Length: 269
Length: 129
Picture (cartoon, rainbow over the protein chains, first blue to last red):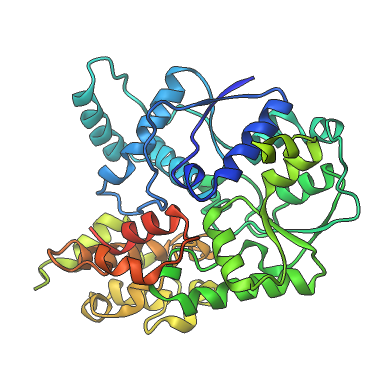
């Protein structure tokens, strides 16, 4: 299976391991990730104002490229996925927005085909669940993670707004827990797993972000977790910064690569 | 100086929010992780915009405390989407010349070497134009 892949800015810099483990795991599971050519940063956050188009054009460029290749557009960073999916939804539901975007895009290329959100936008987790299947993932496990107690941390961007993201139940998600089970480990459920880590407010009000992250960390620790997994570089940064090595926080793809037996090859490179 | 003409209309238009749908249950504020940090809370944004009392919101630091986590959106039983009002009011402020809340020169003092690019691009999207 071939899919279009949007890595995003952080996966090329401070979260290179998130990218490397994603690619290695996809390869081991028979999926080819075709990186979007000349992709541009998604902007990190979706602007909800409906009069802004400039901040949404990088998503449109990636979406239209994937659509032209008739491939789903896959990302693994929660923020990229959220921005691209919300932009795609706006193209489907807001005719005025789509009209202005299409006019703008047509100016840049004579071959541009009008776009109304036809591309399928998937997070790598959804690719694992819906295309590959967690049963196939489980069958491909070489090093079972049996005995590990792992807390899934969703944060906000993977799930919300639920009407648009449509990944899972926004209040009681299970996609990451199901993956943890497929890898042989035991998921730990705790209340703050879908609350925000403090996000970008870490730059403006670090104390406020620290309080949010502590709630998440304390929730996972008191539920007995050995480890927290996330899909988001900013969540991971905030949790590590405010966790003071209380508990390790890793990307879910690192565990996946480890279980599939491809982690060491990646680490050696 | 901020252009105050028709500010309520502009906020309603660019947010796409119908504030009159609100039934004042307060669930948005109860769900808001930044509640304690805010002078005006999400439900107050809704009724202050509805009653045309936007001025205090434009001048409040509450607009920089919102995490855009969409909890208020998913937990509102009336589909009001308060986060879109907070965003529209913040844009009203930072779209004015010289009104950026974050300046590039201030960044080096605020970061460490582990800061992900995602944090910087997100903060600039929310705090500067």
